[in-house]
Image (cartoon, rainbow, N blue to C red; front, side, top):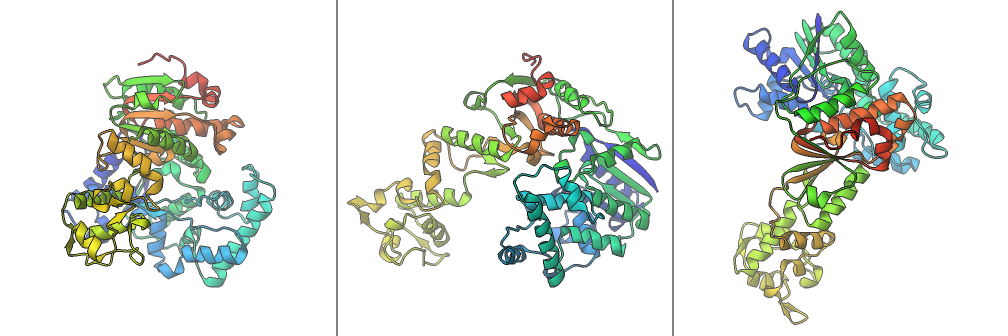
Length: 537
């Protein structure tokens, strides 16, 4: 077996390289698709490359059969263990456990939008600490004690609480014969039953935990693939807080028994962004030394000492990147006050159901007939005072069409209230039920400014972590360090390196223009890198 380490800096086409290699293997009949394992950090990434090598426009079910091992490591373990849904901890299990112990347990695996993250987070500091201990020290009985030496306890009595939660969780799973994500790996490692493979691909390898590397090593040992391709970029390793073993990937690249394949041409990053990003990367103390070239475009770079959201973002499409969820919320509140349409974490802030309800009422006002299904949605957002008693829901036929007179005559819509004729009321007088009331002023402002609620949002707000793998012509990077656990960056070189990696990922999302907005905290921490040469670009 030979191992290739593919080093892919931002925008250098790492996914394309791997896709082309998979294409080559299949087209040259070196193997069948089911003799290739493509293991990635998320379901979305695995499905993307699977879809890109699909030449026959096969349906989803057919694709899964043809490429059964294009998945996450957890999914592979699940398949090879032949697990059933009833064997897995679900929402009800965590609710039962919370009720019986008096402590809050939540489902660790977050699924949706193709995401099945391999190092799950629970949105709970207690449970996250347990997750981290298993990710970093999978075989150590004292894993919880060890993790306490590395993380700061966040409140008095946290240690005893976490130890008890770990014990309660273990007992619950044993008594009810249930498994969690960590148990997949342990069982998979015990049974040693990987699929027969000729080629193994590991994507985003810098994000794998020690536990996951044990699984990868077992697969290589038992399956004995002819070639293994391990792809990643240590400078973009931003999941150490979830247990990522960055040093393992670095050591593999430095192992002379492996062949390093450097990708050296970025198809995303322009020159002025590249020069800043290079300074950031070279300031990381423990990394793989690498060089890559920017695009021919010079690009733009600007550094500002405040958040000029109203002026800078007035035109064009933008991705606003924040260090924490708290800053995301602040930015969203500001955009709300402007009355601008935007996305948050990839989803439009205005729900399609609300847009349809507004359209439905507008159509009814104009004398049009609308489908019963649309009336049903309309009633979900209707002010209860606009309906007669007993008509809180629409009771008509979803397939038939109704006008406003029908709704008044047969389905409980009041004809007038306080001497106001119902037919003449605006949508914001009618649709102010729970779920829309808080957004009412924002929605009205959007429409007053001449925008349409179904316009494509030109602004997206996200944390840097959630944006990994994405790109945008214009990026605004907020370096606010006033919230969160990253303050440890002041306490150790490793912590500072980790923060540099996060900002490096954020900066290299920009294809044309990068605007960096700093605060006192960020300036203090990273002054030599971010805020010199302020006039550049």
